[in-house]
Length: 310
Ligand SMILES: C[S@@+](CC[C@H](N)C(=O)[O-])C[C@H]1O[C@@H](n2cnc3c(N)ncnc32)[C@H](O)[C@@H]1O
Ligand code: SF4
Image 1 (cartoon, helix red, strand yellow):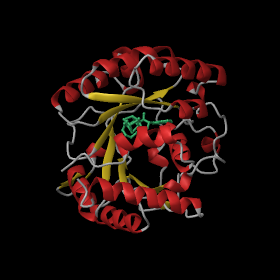
Image 2: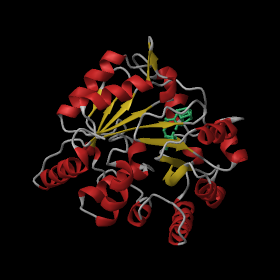
Image 3: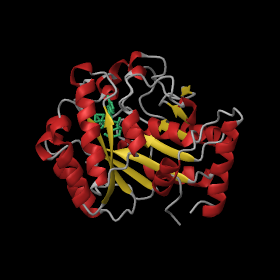
Image 4: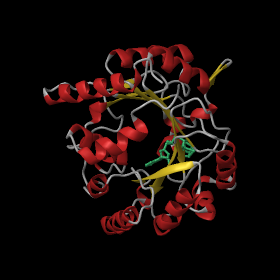
C-alpha cells in the first residue's frame, strides 16, 4: 500500500479533481514508454512497425527513468504506467522492470502498472497488469504471431496476481470475435475484466468503419448488461463512437515520456490525424472522470486508482 493509505489517496484524488475545476491542468497519470523493443510483430501495432524510424535510444536508461518518475511525481502524477514495446524485455545492465516498479514505489506513486503481451514471465510486483488479448487462439495468433496465445494462457496459469485485466483492440481482423474474446476473459479466473478499444490508426486498412464500430458497441453494451466483465463504462462505450475525439480529450491528465526522455504534455499523437481517429478507451474514461461522472469514478477507482500492494 502507498505510504498514504486509502483515505490519503482518495483525498489526493479529490483535491486533484477540485483543482481541475479551477483550471489546473496537471497530470494524474505518468505513462512511460520505456522501450520500443518487442519479441512480437503484431499486425495492428504502429509502434513496433515504425520503431526503426523512431529517433533516439530505443530503451530508456534506469537513471533517466528514475529522473522522469520523480519529475512527473513532483508535477502531480500518482499513477504510473510502463508501456512499450514490451516492458518485460526492458533492462539496463542488471536492472529490470522489477527495479523500475520498486523505484516508482519508493518515489511514492500510489498505483503502478504495466502492459504486456503476456508471452514472457509475468512480473508480479505491480498493482495492475494489463495483458493484451485480441481474440480466440487462431485470431490472436493471426494478429500476434504463432504461439502467442498459448504462451499467454500458460503465463496466466502461473500468476496469482489479483489485478490482471485484458485489453482488446478491435479491428477488421477480430471484429467478429468480440463475444468469444469476452467469454474467454470471463472464464479465465486470473483475468478480472476486459477493456475494449478500437484501433488508433495506422494501419488504416484494418480500422473499423462507423457502422462496424456501432455493431461492436451494441454487442459490448448488451454483454455488459448480461454481467460479462467488460470494464469500459457504458458512457465511454458510447463516446468511442465519436469520430473525432481530439477536442474532448483531456490529454493533460497523463504525462507521456518516450525512451529518449522526450516528454509530451499529454499524448504524443496530439494534433495528428491519428489523434482524430483515436480508439483508446482510457481517454474516454479520463474525460468522464474530469466531468465528475459517478459511474466512471466508482468503476475505475476500484481497479486502477488504489494500491493493491502492502
Ligand atoms: C503498444 S502495446 C505495449 C505493451 C505490450 N507489448 C502489449 O502488446 O500489450 C500496448 C497496447 O497497445 C495496443 N496497440 C498497439 N497498436 C495499437 C494501435 N494501432 N491502436 C490501438 N491500440 C494499439 C496493443 O494491442 C496493446 O494492448
Ligand atoms: S506485443 Fe505489443 S509492442 Fe509488441 S508488436 Fe505487439 S502490440 Fe506492439
